[in-house]
Length: 181
Image (cartoon, rainbow, N blue to C red; front, top):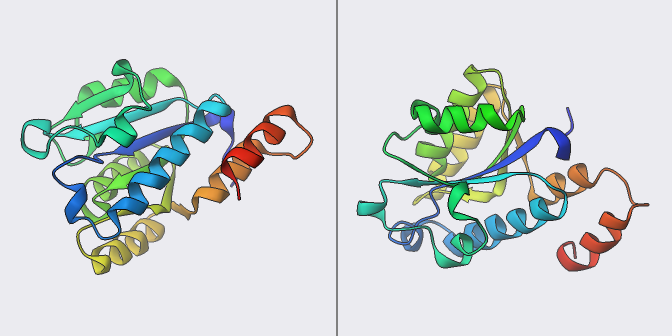
């Protein structure tokens, strides 16, 4: 099962100011989430960003927030994005059945969102180098559990190369030197 740009949506989960400093390798998550957003823009993959209770956890970190439009930002209070009716409707409206996920925390909101998406019949791709938690052990357990339940655990470059699909296009020639090194 390959990711296809025409079938995908990138969902960045809860990369927020008060939480990110406590995240294991939090800078990596921020950098890779931003990288994925930029690649998604190049291949016309819609992007949605969630914020978990921003009053408590603060807004999305500026490096990621600056890459999304206001209408792409979805606030939530449930750990699972799929428990929020407005997010479920938003994703359904996009008509994309492949959801590529980055963000935090891997064992809480990423896990519960992914399981909810799987339950509703979406294909879920969790980007291992763009998710994390406060403890590395929780990330490992979350990725194992997600794989056991049918989520595909992938890397950011897997996402990019599958979205690009081939090397003989103008998009590939534009994206390759800018984002893939």
